[in-house]
Length: 215
Image (cartoon, rainbow, N blue to C red; front, top):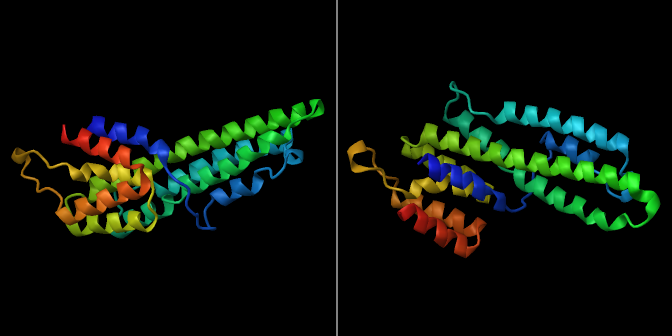
């Protein structure tokens, strides 16, 4: 199981863009992103660098599942984290469109600042992807023996579907070893997880994943 879950975290790099609630602390980062080459300067790059580190810590502190969390609190943390990755990816794609604006020799300083900011956003995106996978994985660990609660977790993910969350939930397709005495997930749950995978991943990726889980 650990090998499969580590594999799923790597596969999470394929997530798709979805809207993020305006209340997210990430909005502070997005507000600092340049909208033109003229806004790419060393001061903005330095400010963004520090802000990203602060926001990362704030997000991690907000969404990390606690031992004292009840079902509602766990689901709330998953719901809060779900939009962060796709919205950051969408903002990164918009930032990348600026790269064609650095055409003259005198724009080298701006280009350096732009590259620094782009690198910081890419790093942020990577850390958010891992954090989302960890939050959903911890939620599945805490809720897997409570079929009603696990069903609510799937419902939460379905409300804002991402490849990361779907892949992390995909271990529900496995049947536990008989000697464990643990009942497998219901066919309904398995069908819903397959539906999430089908919605968020290319068809061939879903087939590959299912074949791997059957081995």
